Length: 585
Ligand SMILES: [Zn+2]
Image (cartoon, rainbow, N blue to C red):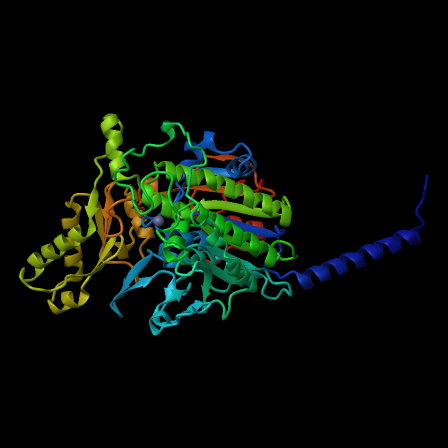
């Protein structure tokens, strides 16, 4: 039997202790205390603007067998019952929620815009009057300078990108956080404040820009991308469907195109020139309202991955991507159209290409990808009516378009009649936003009225107005009393923020739309109804338990999931948990 000499054992013991101490010391010296967890090299958030949760099932047989969706669904976790828990389902709000992991009542982005009493104007969710465009436009007119530009200053909560930067504050190797979109509000609100770059498309010039909130000049790779003028390559290329003969069971759109937007024609092929003879602003708009817009953003994302060497260093990086073309197309032609089907099939290919690129540059099993959307979409009322006509037993309501301007006029005359002299020229409603009215508080005070009484009267009146399901007053929402059984009220409550929300909040009847100058045709979103709240949630990456998950979740879970993958604590105030056993523990 072989015997180890005692002194050799002792020497090995001492060596082990010394080595252990050295490892411990080097670990404590280089790893900040906030990041003790193992992590992936890169986390990627992929948002498709206006992508309804049912699309992944509805068009399942049409997706490519080797496409991105099949890969995410097979190798990742697919949450089929993911709904936003709040009422105002619009782009700014959705992106702020996906980046902060808290509802609008906490992150403060209650709508794409809201009213401010102190300067009597609407505030855009992702801009500040003090910020300017970078690069500075050639025609740098005083008007251009005065226009507010992209800024996350309205966000009241920390984003996951900011949390990642903070966690590695003392590390010599800093994480990189980049946020890209065609829309300014999507890039700005997904990214947040202390990040390396947020870029969006300026459709006047067809170039990606940022604001001087972030940087004094654009990154060299963004300048290079802009100089290459990739955006011009689709000029004159008609948008044709990927699969010209799709079974009619997959689309419901009325073949006459009733209710559809007409900007780029009712049916395929859709021209992309914007009516111009060379690339210019209307052409750039046409690109964004076609699948080519998503291809443009994918190309920029690849450039960012290469130039910033994302996912190749000791600290993890974060890339936020929001693809906007799905939304612009959905607004024009509606969720039951061949156009939305086509952009969704192409979205599958965008995801495939992105995954393949990440495999190549970062490495399989070295990144985590979360895919979701900022909101769903309401069907065109004309399509709902046509479907009902064809099958009277379908459980669909009689949906119509509510004329928003007419509604406010009627509300004004009601308030004047009830509280003022009907002939008075007094303005009772200071402003209407997507789903609420801001009362003229000066008038209420001067007339010696009680704010609560005026709110309640308007809410009661609105509840009887055709197309309005219900209404809530500021006074009752301020009380923040839980009302079990009133699911709509709970969703409205989570969209309410005392300093920014209106005085009376309206909720539309399901399948109704508010028609405005912008939406006499086409469709929109922004309600607490299922078709607006339901979005996909797919999580893919090392350690993720693959499979279909049918439990109820919200997109707020994105932030704790990303924090877990990045090995950091979620930002303060995040209460949403990582779904149980998602990471196999
Ligand atoms: Zn939209």
